[in-house]
Structure formats: structure tokens, C-alpha cells
Image (cartoon, rainbow, N blue to C red):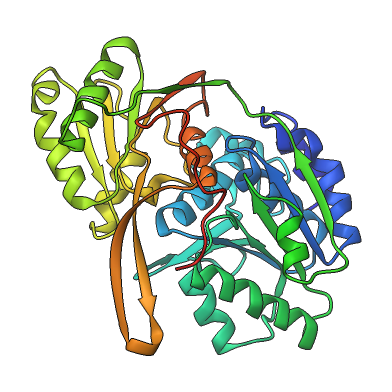
Length: 376
């Protein structure tokens, strides 16, 4: 993509990262390993793939930790290019048609059991598992100019392996390959810990809209799901938009859904979002609803890189379900744990994307959280 043309798109975007487009382009151009830091809502996932594609030769691969995030980022990139052809030059006829296909798409995606890819796509959004299969089949990553690892603070064995294999590809086969990491909560120390001596880093401050954080610790409720349902009901009464609720797992989601039946009778649309759902059902949370307020009950699948229009309030249980692997024993276990500070910041950032928001945290403000996630 032409850098001037990309800037033409970005100049109308309100994201803080878009205002640093020239600096980020220079950073990517000058370094083969670089990082972009910025809080949730700053526009990293949307803006940086555009900038990278204007600097490098070849396709830009964007790695997301979750399938829904990969699809959402892909769709957002294409939405921004409506009115432009495949070379990101303005096309009046395409703009008047109002269709992404006529306007010229720039991004495709590949996730498990689903893909939408065209040979002219300049950005490809994938999950960690898909990238691992790609690089296993061809370690040289032919035709790829840059690899972006988004949400690197969400540590997992798969994401760490993606980083190691991408770095190996650069060192052994592709000296021209650019590696870009992005995070809302960790900085240069992550690259230093990985032994990277030469790299560039930029931190972009600010988010689109402010988010007020409140704490509502569960003191008098033996049943945490009951307390969560009460917090949701109270939040509905004092906010006007849609709500996104973070719960540890499917069992808690279904229980809270049952407890919110009175709100459904009042016209609220309650949607569930967890990993084992049918992909088409997962996508329903991204659809606009003009005639009903939404309450989305989700696991951490909704924690990163998702802009769900209408969300003005986040209710965060502060819990997540973690899987622990024991390779020597060929066994695993699942535990419910308190989230990290990095995850709490990510969840807060789901509000304040399109207007000022509020985040209600269901734990005591004095509680000290671990700084970030560690691979199990």
C-alpha cells in the first residue's frame, strides 16, 4: 500500500495510534524487530496493520489469540477501505456502491474451520494455531513482509511458540522479515527478556474515550453468580448502552443468564459468548441491534481486539478459567483464578471505544493482582 494513501485513510480516524502513523512507519522501516505499546482502545489492532503494509514488501500477517478477534480485525480493516480500490486509491464508483467487494478489500482471515482469503489480500489475520501450521508447512514464510503478534501480554504456550518460530524464520531464512509485537500492558522489558538486543519501541498514550472504574466487592453473597446478576441489574438501571460481562466459564454464563430472566422480559437481549459455541453464534455479538439493549455474557474470548458497538459498561467478575498442562504426565487440569492486572486493563478497555464508559470490577480495590499472565 502507498504510505500517502494509507495516511489519507488514517487522518480521519480518531485513534491515538493513527496520530503517530509517521513515527510508527519510520520505526518499522528502521528496525527488523519493533514493538508498539498503547492502552486498550488506542487503535493498535486497527491502525498498525495498515501502516506496516505501507512500509514492507509482501503480505502482513496479523496473529490474534482468538478466532473472533481475528475475524473482527479483518472486517474492521475492510470497512475502513470502503471507497478505495485494492491499491487503496480513492474510487468514487465503489464508494457510491457501498460494498466492500466493489470498494476493494485489503484483508482476509484464516481461523479454525473457516477462512475468507483472496490472493490480493495485503493483510491476513490468523489465530496462533493457524500461524503455527503455516510456518510448520513453510518455515520461510514466502510472500510475507511482516508478522504482527498482537496482545503479546496474553501469554500462552502457543503465542510464545509463534514468537520463537517467527524469530527463527527471520534469523535463518528471512533477514528481510519484519517482526512487530503489540501490547496494552507490557513494554520493552518483554523483548529484553527474550534476548533481543536491537529493536525499536514506541508507546502511544491515550484512548478514544475515558472509562470510569468502580469496585463492588462481593461481601454479602455466598453465590458469586447471584452477586454478579445483581451487579448487572444495577448497572442496567444507571447506564444507557449495552453491557459486556466477563465471567470465568460456560457454567457461570448459563447460570447468570437464568438469573437475568426478569431483564429479558423487560426487552433486554442477552447473548452468550464462549469458546465452545458455534462460530456463527459467536458472530452474533458483533451484529448491531437497534431496537434492544444487549447484555453480552462472555469469557475472556471477548477480552482483546474486539470493538463491539454500543458497549458503554463492562462488568468484570475478575475471574478466568485456566488450563494447566502437565507434559510429563500427559495430563491437564482446569482452575478458576483471579485475572492479572494486564487482563483487567484489557477488559476495562472494551468500554470507552465509541463513547465514555464505565467498568464495574467485582473485587476489592485493595486486592493486589499479578502483573501479567504466565503460560501454564
